[in-house]
Amino acid sequence: MESSWLSTERVTAEILLADGATLEGALHLQARVAHRDGGETPLEMLNRAEHFFPVSTPGGGVVFVSKAQVALVRIAPDAVAAEAPEARLAPEVELEVTMHGGTVRLGRARLLLPPTRTRALDYVNSQDPFFALRGPEGLLLIGRTHVRLVRPLD
Image 1 (spheres, rainbow, N blue to C red):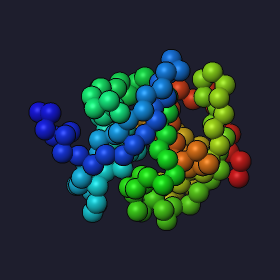
Image 2 (tube, rainbow, N blue to C red; image 1 turned 90 degrees about the vertical axis):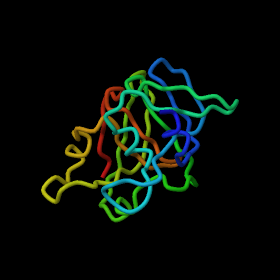
Image 3 (cartoon, one colour; image 1 turned 135 degrees about the horizontal axis):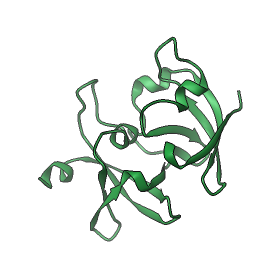
C-alpha cells in the first residue's frame, strides 16, 4: 500500500496547521491524472476525498497530515507543476483573504469555473475544501473552513 505514495512526484511545501504549527516537507502528487495529460497538482491532491495526505519530512520520515487541520499550504513561486496548464488561461480576480486569527493573505485567484459562474463569490463558494491564491508568497492553497472572510479587490 505504501508503494503508491512512494512512487509519486514531490513538491516542497510549507503547511500551516489550524493551531498555528508549521510543517515543512514534500507533498506527494500522482504522476498522472485521468482527466487530462500530465501530473496531479497540489490543489487537486488536497481536494481529493481522502482525509489524510503524506508529507515527507526533511529528516527522511513521513507523516500523514489531516486535511481538516490544514489552514494553508504554501508552495514557492518557482515550484514546478504547481498549477494545471488550463488554469493559466482562466480569468483572474484579486482577493484579500482573512484567516481565522486575523492573518491577511493577498493574491490572485484563477476562476476556472463554468461560463455562467464567473464571480469571485462563485469561486469561494466552490464545493472543494481548498482554493488557490497566487501572490508574492507563492501559490497558497487555502482551507475554506479556516477562512474568516474574503474581500474581492477587483
